[in-house]
Length: 302
Image 1 (cartoon, one colour):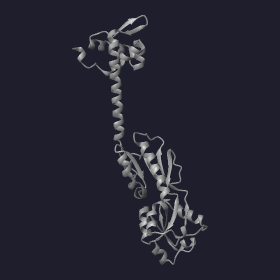
Image 2 (tube, rainbow, N blue to C red):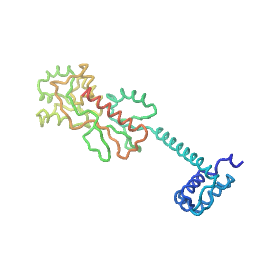
Image 3 (cartoon, rainbow, N blue to C red):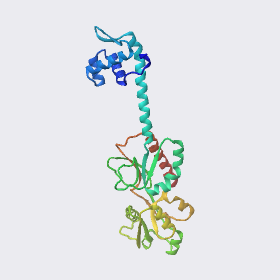
Image 4 (cartoon, rainbow, N blue to C red):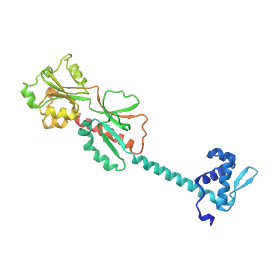
């Protein structure tokens, strides 16, 4: 039986609904972006398939026959269901693409990794991929980039996270070996452990404490804050580091903050994302969570 078979095509259903709505093959053709002859052909094919007339011509144009009136809600429902299915598939595909999060290694080590399991448990459907290195040949830009600096970042939306409060830290054994630390100027007799990307910390420290032009006895540069912190604990020199990254060492006594010396830097850790980033499912939830966790982190450890 003809009625037991599927319709010739979804195009035929769309054309049928367009003609039913507009009462004209010409206006329907414009609505579905087909020629008028193609619209007429689609209607003819559908009527042959159903073995019944769906339209009759009246004074004001084409109008549905009784059979057409019966068929219309079913055609409408079929198109709606297919569109809903397509949307579900698109959402599934979007969820299948991981959110790429690039960050400084110290941010992952001292902040994010110990907190992220709570987010992953609450949002198992959101796939987040982490990296702290992007090569020059990398073709896919990270969706979220946590960077250190002062900004602005052209073409990027930026949100401050933490890290502007910087402390001078050293191992107690080093201070004892060097004869103590009685005043800010004593830093000049020390070896400075410096992050190679953050040389401005020295200038900010000396400016804050009235030591403009001062230089340390020696400077050793490192590429990772985790190495600087370990070197400071080992007594290899003093370091200027965001206080939030050495909170554990200060609490345990492995490092001390002589005379409470430090400063508020113009630079800090920022969450940045391209203004053109597609906010696919889960993206906004992750950004909101990162910002909320950063606020708590700085309040507790800053």
